[in-house]
Image (cartoon, rainbow, N blue to C red; front, side, top):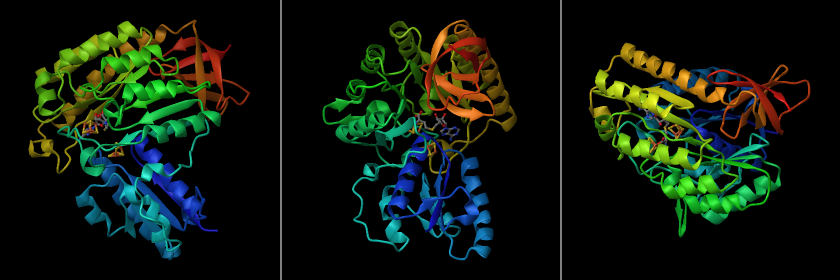
Length: 417
Ligand code: SAH
Ligand code: SF4
Ligand code: F3S
């Protein structure tokens, strides 16, 4: 039997796409191997968000070249988020460079069988990697063109998945014992299928019977509205956790990033969220060192960080991406200064995250365990906090009450109740 090996880079969306790729290969009677040297076909789902992510693919090309000296029949496929200009480069290093929307064609490309050209690749039933937490894309693509971002070029325009199809996938997952459902999209807040917008979709999913948590990512502050806040507050299955990427705490920088909101508008949404959902945990994404970001403008971001008191933040050093609007500007903040700004934010984050985490000490919290190292089990609670428990018993996939005994900035230690 022929074997496939998948290498995934990028966000949850790419992980989810890779699960669809795996399912297409299994339907063509391929089996998965974790041993790359045993593979007949290797598929790479690539991320282009930063240049460093693209550089990793160059490294892989070298590795494949070596593998091919002993395994002459090895076929390599590149898919995922690939920029047009990189397609031209990687066509040298891979046998096939395939648009993610064409994954149904893989068996045909491998010479196995002919498949009708796909209408929508999202209707491929995925082969879920995890047995209790599932990624469910509700849309793909992006119409926002933030000045720094490649996603609108790699994933093209927004397409929402039919609500019926999405709900039916979630219903099946819950029936099969899945406890955590991630609804995915580059901007889930602009989901639209006829009269079903995102908050209505949340309601419909919340109405499915069962014990499960719903999380979603990513949200865009310009589209994140009161209806979604109310849906989160009113529907018990939607967890009190939100990633709301702010990117910068300075209005001028936000404008040149093409983000379409002000710091005041953003803070107002955070305020409403905390009023309606007092136990909510909030995370954000930040870019430090965007072209022309002055020290003063950066200090506005630091100020926002202190004010909002995030639970978590994904802090990114600006990386110029060819073809984007920002690439026309000079990448004029030095790497040393970007690192310096990153550290300042990380230090504030450690303080605010610890402050939030300390509130859990002595309290009980429900945890879904999803990772295991030696006798330690790691899981997430509703607020998406990482919780560590030492246990002799296998806790994987279980949702259990844990009493928190110790708090650190990015982890809580606890005991099973
Ligand atoms: N759709 C999501 C983000 C996708 S990319 C959203 O709108 O929030 C994930 C994160 O990568 C972004 O939030 C941003 O902080 C970061 N990012 C994107 N392009 C970048 C670039 N050119 N340089 C540095 N970080 C970048
Ligand atoms: Fe990129 Fe902006 Fe779209 Fe997010 S909303 S994927 S940051 S262009
Ligand atoms: Fe990367 Fe594409 Fe996600 S560029 S961050 S894999 S949407």
